[in-house]
Length: 247
Image (cartoon, rainbow, N blue to C red; front, side, top):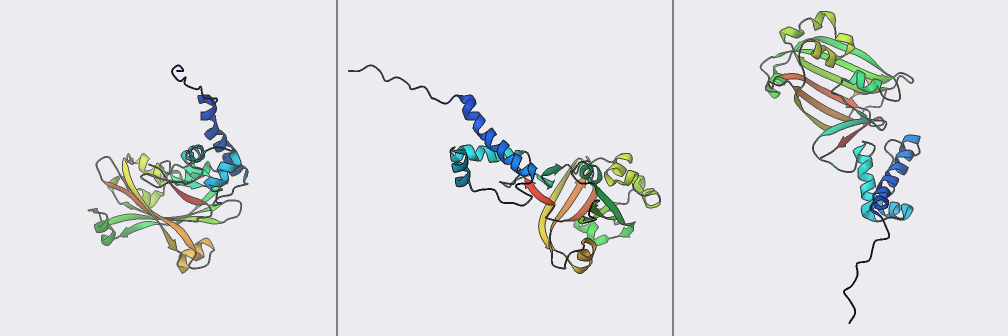
């Protein structure tokens, strides 16, 4: 009889195995950042990537997960939402102006409206006792081309600490900065997203045809006491924005 069977040593070291997903992610990231794979482009199928890199399907999936973790591609849905602009993540807790200013193209903000409004229907829908709001409507446009990439309509409960905004405007042009200056900070929130076809008025604002599909998000932010701080509805040009969800 022969002796006990010996375990065969793997020819692949753990370091080599771990490097393969990283190599796939790096190669695809170069394609994305160089513009070879533009925003909205479809990546090769898993089978095609398996053949291209001569690896297993599980290795390909690990590489794609690494890209998704950087916000470069969307591969799964779940809890938590982040908007990406031309392949870069926007942290809208900073405020749109500061977040967008970090992107590849400069973005200009145009204030369309800043006034007091009374909206009992909205207050009831948001379970808010205050029916008086500050209405802040803005557009964002690429500085180079003037293309409007978003329309935002914010509604902020008119609290005593924000009464000066009606006369003085937003601090540094930012609603987030204005809230912080007033001692109001976001503690929690919710966000929803769906597709909306532009009506005539909004289409005219962005220079598109009525019926053009845009990404519509609704964001609700509250303070540590659960009080409503801001409710904003945004219309985002899908050529520049995408929704990235993680869990």
